[in-house]
Structure formats: structure tokens, C-alpha cells
Image 1 (cartoon, helix red, strand yellow):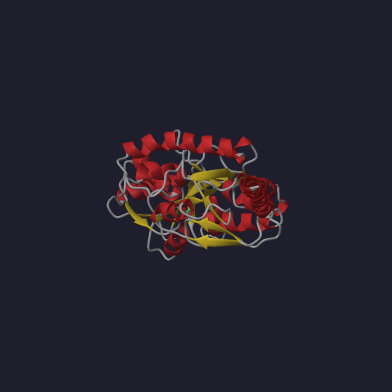
Image 2 (image 1 turned 45 degrees about the vertical axis):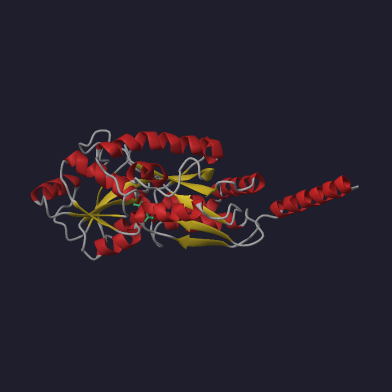
Length: 326
Ligand code: ASP
């Protein structure tokens, strides 16, 4: 009798747990963006949130900006959050560069997250303040050479895309610059517009409108192919400008804390795939030079494999550059 009662209770609990998961999401979902509001990753998150709303049963999607330490503070917050699908992370290539950069990372990149799928790939642009005398890439290099020791290069902290790109740029030119870290490239852009810093390597999602309105000077793109977005199409690649092989493209992905139930993960992945096909999202991404991922990396297993491959690709580059933080 006792065993029978217990098994009934067990069955009832299983049914109610299933019902709870089947209803997910039943309250707003928070996407943690590990960079400042108004920046490139934030823009992707806000546009994606719009596209996710319908496939997520019209629940509000809240964006929480947790900037600092090149994205690792926001990633830590999600790694330690309740694994219930209500706090997820939207992060970029920093997921793969941080393990080599930080000696004491508060999370294990490949073990502490559930991988939900890649979102997009974003080229970067090399831009400068309008008061720079240089008007094209060759003139920029001349100016940089003539101003060794005086150049300020903005970035969003160690582990940020702007850090990686700036690091490779300095190495290729063999010119050391003073890096000025921000909580994201949104505040960095404000200072570039104000002329407090000289140059920055930043994602096209943050620079396209500034380039278009002439508020910054644009010198080159970081991908090996020229871009097709009209405002950016005229820019040469760094590769064709003499930095053979220079190729930095940033990707964004979605993550949940480890241990999030499978039905919740399935729902999030299905919602992500639906959002990536949203016509408005596609239009906005295209206008900013970003390319939506449509291949197998929108699946959790391939997403994880991709991040692992990126860790293996960038780790040695970063270590060789002698870059690290505690
Ligand atoms: N993604 C960062 C941001 O949104 C910038 C960076 O990684 O360089 O501010």
C-alpha cells in the first residue's frame, strides 16, 4: 500500500514537472548581454528579442546589460544563474577568447553552459575620429607610424572583439598603441566621436550608421572579402591592404546555464531558429553588415563544436601575444 502511494505521488510529481516545462515560458525571459547598452552585441540582442517574442509565446524578453571585464562578468552571471530558462546569455567570440586571456575565469566555457545555437557573423571595421588627417588606409598607416607612442586605441576590454582585432592590428603593423578599455564599444564610440580616443576596431553593427553619417572615418574591413552592404562596400579589406591573411569575423550565440531541462532547451532552440527566419530581423542584420547563420551551427551540438574550434584557433594567438589578465 505504502509503495503504491509513493509511486502515485512520484507519478503526480513527474506530471506536474512536465506540465511546468511544457508551459515554458510562463513569465518574461531575461537575456544577459555582457556589454554596455547601445553597443553592437546589445543591438543584436534587442533585434533578436523582437524576433523571439512570437516564438516564445509572446512573453516579454528583457535585456540586461552586464558589461565589464571583456564580457566575462555577464557570462559569469549566467553560468551561476538558476537553470530554468529564464536567464540566458547572448555572447560573442569572447566566449572563445576569454579562456586564454583570463587566468581565473569564474566559469568553464565548455562545461558550465548549455549551447543553444549561433545567431550571426559580423565583420569588423577599422575606424577613426574625424579629426585624423588620414583619409584612407595608406594615409592612416603613415599617420600611425609618425605618431608612435601617442596613439589611443579604444576597446571593450580584454576578451572583447575590439580587443582581439586591435591586438592583431598592432601586431601586424608592429606599432604599440595605448589601449583604452570600456564596458562596451557604445561608450567607446561616444569618446571616439568626441575625439578623446583616436581609432577603434569595431563591429559593423555599431559603426555602419556612424560611417554613413560621416561622424567617423572608416579605413578598412577585417574580413578577407569586401562587404556588400552599400555603405561598407567601398572599404578595402585589411588583407588586400597589405595585412595578408588578416581575417576577423565575430559571431554571436545563445547560452543557458548548465542543467537547464531538455524541454526548455528544445523550446529555446526552436524559438531561436524561428527568430533567425524573421523577415524584419533579416532586414536589420543585413543593413548593418551582419550575416545570419543558417547552417548546422544553429544546432546546440554544432554550436559547441564551433566554440571549441574557436578556442583552439585563438588560444595560441593570444598566448603568443603574451596577453592575459587575472
Ligand atoms: N561586443 C562589444 C559590445 O557590444 C564590443 C566588443 O566586443 O568589442 O560593446
